[in-house]
Structure formats: C-alpha cells, structure tokens
Length: 407
Image (cartoon, helix red, strand yellow):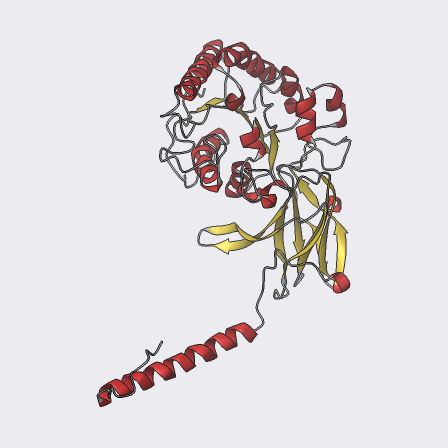
C-alpha cells in the first residue's frame, strides 16, 4: 500500500521509481486475483442449497453401506437389529437409532456430488457439539498419496432443518473416483440420497474386509467431534482402510451381557471394548471378566482389545476424577490379568494415560474429546489394532502396552 505524501514534500528520484514498481506490482496482483476468481475450478459448497435440475438421485441404501452390521432392522439406518429393542436397555436402544459410524461408499465419475438427507430429530446440535457433527454428513474421496492411496476430506453437509439438500462438490473433471460419505453421529436418518450429474455413472464400491467393532460410551459414539469423519472410530477406519462398526452408546456403554451376544453376531476382525468412561472400579470388577468370557466363548479366535479410561483433562485439579481414573484402570488391569491367567488368548490391552495427551487441550468439557483429542486417540489405538490384526506398516505413535498381555 502506497502511503500518503504531504503536498510540499519531494521524494528523491529513486523513491519515485520504488513507488512506480509498487503500483505495477499492485496491478499485477490485481490481475492475478481477477483471473483466479473468474477461472472455473472444483469448488466445495458445503453450505450451498442444491440446484438439482440436472442431477440424478440414488438411494444411499442401494450403494455400499458400511458400519451397519445387522440385516433385520426396524429402520434402515439403525445400528442394532430390530430384536434388540426388547433385549437391551431403553437408553441403549434409543442411542442405537443414531447413525453414528455408518458410511456410504460409492464410485462415480460425476462432476458434481450432492446429498439430501432427512433426519429423525429436530435437535440438530448440542450445547457442546455443533450441528455439523450431531446431524451433518461428511464426504471423503480416495486419492493417490505419497505412500499409496489415502482418504482426503472434501466437504460436509451442514444441516439447517430435518430435511436438507446440499451440493458438496461441483466443477470436478470427469473421472472415476471412490467416495466415502459419513452419516450423522448423534441424530437418526430416515432417508439419504446421493445426487450426481444426469449423465454420470454411480455404483457401489467393492466390499472390504471384516470390520473392527467398537463397543463403548459417548466418546465412541462420537462426542464431541466437529463432523462425523473426525470421530476416532472413523479416523481409524480410514487409516487402516477397513470397515468399522460403531456401537458407542452415550451414557450406556456399561458392558451389558446382552451386548456380548449381539457383538458376537458380527463377523469381526477385532472387537474393541472401551467402556470405562461409564464404569467405576466396582462395576469394572463385576462386569469385565464375565463379558470377555462370554464374547470369547462365542468368538474363540477374534482378537479382543481392552481399553483403559481416558484421563479427565481436569483430573489434576479434581480429586474425585483422579480417583475414578485410578480405580477403574486398576480394576481393568486386574480383570485382564485374571483373563490371561485363565488362558484367554488374543487379548490386547491399551493403557489410558496417552489417549488425550497431557496438555489439557484435547476435550470440550474435560471428558469428551474435541477434534484434537480424537486424533490423539486414533494415534494411540492404531498400533494396538495393527498388532491385533497382524498388520505391518507405519505407526503414528509408540503406545505403551501395545501387546501387553497378548497371547
């Protein structure tokens, strides 16, 4: 920016040259900006209403749906089977109507990707979790990364009502791509459709390996990710390139024995038990060993990962929270030792100290992770899951206890 010069002040001649160069430089930058603004380029338009006159809509249920493990459901986008309504506790059933962890994978050469979805509840957000995470959808695309194919975030669909229609990406070059669309974390879905250009192709992506099944609390459920793809369950699915099943139930991940029976109906690659945030030490002592015995009897060879409680962010100031962390972790370690002594095989253990880090920045309320917290949790989980799956590959971080007690 050229500064104002008093009328009676005369600059030396070399300063006039500098001023001329600055003006020319400004004109050049202005022309470049104009070119960029008028050039046609792919655009993510997450919050833009969709002009569907030239789109063809496909029911999401007709594509490859992951994270939905049971065939007979009361609603197409439920997480538990219809029979579970009379088996599990009411809070579990209510939370199971949320579409957390469910994702649609498809292949399309469309230049435009749009979505319209109808929610079951008008509670679009929570005080500590935005509407984009509670009720929004989240789109990723598979691209060639430095070390091979990887998933890259594209856009999210931001809800404004129970019925929503959004263009997520437009202006793409016509080419076949694999897409991954996550459904809302803390709301249910009545219907969802994918919109593509009228002359474009769209088909289900190929089925993948057996899923990792996560059973847990509100944290597993996804509180409080800013968008569905940022829950650690989803992050791990992308990093390991496997389907994931999210059986997180807010306030209700309590190692109920009926959940062991339901989990065993899923042909899983790994079972993850992450219920300590909803259990004190006494309940862990009473429930952990019977639950694992029951699950192991039904699925003798599938690896089981036991996860300690995360550290409350304010535990250093709150003695009751520090005591809860200490006691329920000690109870789980005792349960783990007893199971190993019994000869339970393929049992893995994840310690809780490093799940959220030590700087106090990884939660929204000392308990529920923010996006940073979920990335840190994924970093801690990843090497343990790789070990359980006999996977090789880069590990995001070294976590104590990766194979602690495994047999």
